[in-house]
Image (cartoon, rainbow, N blue to C red):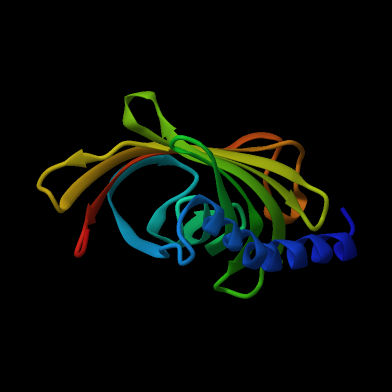
Length: 201
């Protein structure tokens, strides 16, 4: 994908939700309710190969059918000493408990020595059987590299507000990427346990 085409796709993704949110009126009253939710999660302990994640921040705003998502996480990865990943998505509900997502992702390193990477991202997020929260994403970088990520997690309530969250996450690359020092195939695999305290439910 050329950088000009990539920039055009990003432009459409950022401005399309303004029109899409108007569709909420068709499914409700003239003034559809807009909700929001934000979570900040940190690691309790984990078994891992090649990465370590110290926080996971995510949040959304919108209605029942259309939402804007913002996600960010910090982890070690390839030649990034400390990599931050930031994502912005438009999310559309198409079935009960399932949303289709399209947006952009940006990777950058805190040491400022590694090359930043931008991605066009397509994803699917929802609730699989047995209450497993599932997230699947496909990435196309501005350098023409393809990769995919799959994550599942489940909530275990300790109290009504304190929640333990076992999870696993894997990332797969379609080809070798010298800039990131990764090879084709499974490049990252995590099994971990996170904890969440809901200040307001």
